[in-house]
Length: 359
Image 1 (cartoon, rainbow, N blue to C red):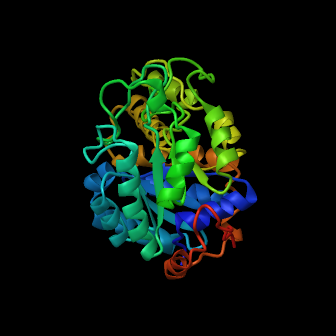
Image 2 (image 1 turned 30 degrees about the vertical axis):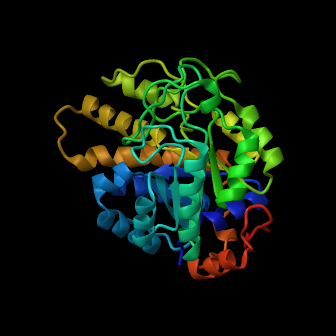
Image 3 (image 1 turned 45 degrees about the vertical axis):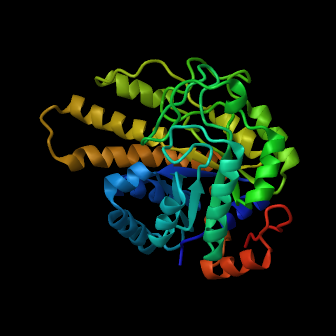
């Protein structure tokens, strides 16, 4: 069976010093592009679905897609992850539908728009971790609020993101607070705030330390060497795909994403999961536009979707190779969730004292 928990996968990544891109999906074409790229380079995979994606495709359809991927790509360890869960019910319903990992984002309240406080975040994340670990599923938490250090604003994605403006201290994770949070919640992975944000318009210029606080990653890794760190909002928004998009009728204004070399720097300091969504959206829609501009009479959706799959596949291969994920799928022996549940129950996977379980 190819389905793997986030905890086992990130423990393997931690032991061997690589990162894993976590690609958001909404449909079959995205899923195929990611898995084909993984097969090309022998990489394990994290697929994740937001609440918006689950609403768009439906849990039954998404579940059948994942079942099909397991059958089609049996050699690829595959983690299915709930992205930005907003309450206990969202997370538990994901596990009921076969997800091996969930994110409880308690940095915002249940409306996914209002910043919460530390006590709320600890309480709800701890509840999800206790329940998920009981059945062997992994849990990602978040400390600090995802948003732009340039503007102080968030950028909502699928309805998730704060409204208004926040002070800088709320947009940058405090390492000491993060250490207390991990100890209190027992999360398997920790998403941190360093100035990245959702969507294409992350930065108005090439990001420097003033607006992309990579030094926080390094401080966190010093304090929490056994905790798997997660970078959200980490699409690089490649200029090559911006150019294709705009050359074929698009109107994307100048923008910068998170440079791949900065993500690689983060991987050297404990980043194990890197969330990517916009890059695949941009590559796919740029391919759509190119087909439409090249042959305005074309109406067969397959003629648009096949180039889009190949464009996304190219982006995925590049990320697997840059992050060191390539070559690791065949090195992992998947541990069933039932065995993971036993290890959680025994205390063997407490993030403060755990030995890694790479296989």
